[in-house]
Structure formats: C-alpha cells, structure tokens
Length: 453
Ligand SMILES: *[C@@H]1O[C@H](CO)[C@@H](O)[C@H](O)[C@H]1NC(C)=O
Ligand SMILES: *[C@@H]1O[C@H](CO)[C@@H](O)[C@H](O)[C@H]1NC(C)=O
Ligand SMILES: *[C@@H]1O[C@H](CO)[C@@H](O)[C@H](O)[C@H]1NC(C)=O
Ligand SMILES: *[C@@H]1O[C@H](CO)[C@@H](O)[C@H](O)[C@H]1NC(C)=O
Ligand SMILES: *[C@@H]1O[C@H](CO)[C@@H](O)[C@H](O)[C@H]1NC(C)=O
Image (tube, helix red, strand yellow):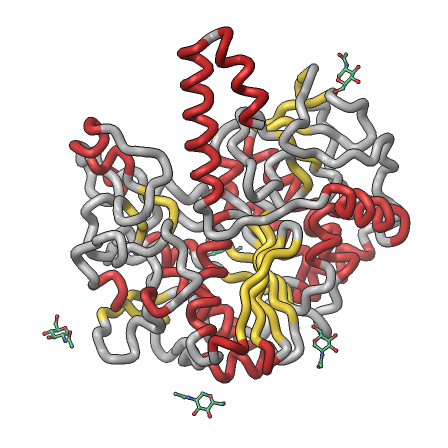
C-alpha cells in the first residue's frame, strides 16, 4: 500500500507526503483501537450465500453476492424511492400482529419496578467502583480516564439507585459466570456497545486466573474466553446492524456511508450462534445522511435517506431477523437504547457554551433530557421493540446516562491524532463527550443486564 503511494509522491511531493502522513496517522488510529481484526472476505461471502437461501427465503434475491466493503461506492444517487422493509409483509392478515400486541404486554414484575428510573447516589464505600480499570489488561486507552490523568475520581463512585422500594441486584461476578457457563454472550454494535463490552470483560476477568482466560479475534469478532466456564464474552463490530461499507472494524473512516437495509444476514451469520445477545445502534446514524444500496439493485446504484429513516429501516430488518430466529426460551436478546452525548453544556447550564469538559457532578434534575438523545428515535425504537414482545428485553439506559455529564472520557483518554497547540489551549474543543470512562457509567448498564438475565 505504501509503495503505491510513493509513486504518487514523486509527482506531487508535498501532497504525496501529506497523504502518506495521513495514511500513517490513520493506520495508527486504527492500530490502536481496542481490538484489531483480520478479515476474511471469502468466508463472509460463503456464510452470506448459504444463509440467503436457507434461513430467509422471503428476502429479495440478490443479483450479486458481493458484500459491501470499504471500496464500495455509489456511482449514482437518487432520491429515496419509498421502499420499506416490511417485516410484517409475510403475515397474511392482522392476525399475527394481534398476537404480538398481546405478547408485548409488560410482565407484572415490570409494573412493580422500573429500575431504569431512579437517581445516582455518591458511594465511596469499598464496593465502588465495581472494578479497577488499572487491574484490567483489556482496558482500552479510549476509556482509561484515570490512566490519562483525570484528576477528579468521584465519577467512579456513583451508584445507580432505582426509586424505592426497588433495588438493583448486587453485582456478583461469580454468579454472572455461573449464568454464562457453557454459553456465548455477544455484544453487537458500535463503539458505545464496545464500551459496554470492555466494561463487562473488566468486571468479569478479575476472578479468572490469568492462565485460564484469553482474548482473541476471529474475523470481525473479538472474543474473551474463560476456560473453566467454557464461556465467552464477545464483541462484533456492526455499527449499523445491517450490512454496510463501514463493517470493517479497522478501516472505517469513510466519507460516504452505504448501507444495505435489506441485508442483516452478513452479521446475523456471526451472531446467530450466540446464546445471549446485546445490541445497540444510534450514534452512527446521527452524523449525516446515509446511502442505501438495495440487494436487488444494480451495483453502484444508490438512494439517499436521512439518518433517522435509515435507522428505522435497519431496525426493521434486524427485528425481522429476531422475529424469525429467536426463541426466548433458549436465547436472550437485549437492546440497549441510545447512549446520550453531552456536547452542549447549554442543555444543562443555559447560556454556557462548553460541553462535558470539566464536568465533575451528575445532573440532579429529575427527568433531565438533553439534545444528545433524540426523542423521535426513542419512539421509533420503542415501536419496533414493542412488536417483538418477549423476544427482546430493553436496557433503557438513556435517562440514567443523561444525568451523567461527568462520566465521559473528555480529554482524559488517548487521542490518536496529534493535538495542535491551538486545540491544547482549548481542551473543550477536543473533549470526547460520547464515550464513557471506565470504571464508570457502562458498569451500571452491565449491572442492569445482570439484573435481567
Ligand atoms: C467518602 O466521602 C466522604 C464525603 O465526601 C468523605 O468525607 C470521606 O472521607 C470519603 N471516604 C473515603 C474512604 O474516600
Ligand atoms: C456471589 O455469588 C456466589 C455464588 O452464588 C456466592 O457464593 C457469593 O457469596 C456471592 N458473593 C457476594 C459478595 O455476594
Ligand atoms: C462448551 O460450550 C459450547 C457452546 O458454547 C458447547 O458446544 C460445548 O459442548 C461446550 N464444551 C464443553 C466441554 O462443555
Ligand atoms: C456503476 O458502477 C458499477 C461498478 O461499480 C458498474 O458496473 C456500473 O456500470 C456503473 N454504472 C454506471 C451507470 O456508471
Ligand atoms: C426508555 O425510557 C424513557 C424514559 O426515560 C421512555 O421515554 C422511553 O420510551 C423508554 N424506551 C423504551 C424503548 O422503552
């Protein structure tokens, strides 16, 4: 690759040099991510093609088996044709839907306790935080706030307390491992989901002897394994849930986002064997419009939709798969609602112009909701999940995480690109108000997962 660039360099020395620099930087960015994977395209193709015919006869035929990858492009982009992912279409009447509504009625215990509603309580007892970041060999530098010099450590000591009389089940790693015995648990989604996965691995690894644990990668999946429990805790990078050109966990800095909303199969072939699945998707849809390339259309022919429309299509495609493939008696599926960002301090401190940088305390105002959590998206997710009834449990982390403006990585993380002097003078300009410090907020998301398992 570098060789190819060097021929360009001789023609346009400066541009070439900058290009190479960018390339090296990009490479470093990617190389330093929490996980590095090698991809095996042929394997992907194989898995996709067999599944297309056996598991999903009702999806449209694909006129080519090529998967989207980082080289995929749109050579023509039209307006959205209005085509929908009708995952109910195969139901002959409203009959089927009526069943879902009945099945979706909340269980009695849910009526008694809403553990997602409550407040943060400062708790500096010895049991908090639930793990020590520095003891965890799998911690990632994007999340290691203490290591990167965060001076205030109170953010590690907040405990989530549901409103009385409800309580969250006490975290117990041994008990969690017992539930995982002989099972595969897989997190599927974007870097926020990986944030939660790293938290889970760190919460769990401490009680496993070093020589009985391992971390490995297999195509797009990163796998933590505990030998004695014959159990794994895995992460699959799939930021849009459906097939996209950003599915390579290493090369994903692309200008154009292309998705294939009628194809969840590329990823489903990897997640279908897991026993416990935890999905998320949100932030990647917020950035800009996305292009759609339908499986049945000619290669390179795209349509454009806004992020919200794209996300709804992807959620429907995903729901279609869940509906057809999940038996809640043998598999558990969780969906994690949007992880809020705190990029506008005006939301909680009217008139101010900062972001999460420098925030040291949670928001106390009950039901606080900032601009980082899109309400229409929440409603859409709710609609889709309701139709899936007991097949999916919701981890509704949005409200409780909204309070935690103090919990983000901010400037206390590794930054892959060098920071200019100008940036350094204004730390808020490069603060990361998306990801969360560990130990921290995602530990509670996992505590909730533990609570519902
Ligand atoms: C816990 O917090 C209280 C109040 O902030 C403080 O007085 C006390 O010293 C802290 N204890 C420990 C062990 O940090
Ligand atoms: C954790 O769970 C295990 C197994 O159920 C139990 O033996 C142990 O006492 C629990 N630990 C705590 C601190 O509750
Ligand atoms: C380990 O777990 C897998 C499922 O993840 C199962 O197929 C296999 O039989 C288990 N092995 C043992 C030795 O229990
Ligand atoms: C679009 O690109 C594909 C290959 O990427 C090519 O086969 C096709 O002919 C192109 N169509 C147009 C209209 O340029
Ligand atoms: C999550 O909780 C919020 C309130 O905090 C609620 O508005 C929303 O409907 C819930 N989402 C789902 C999917 O249940």
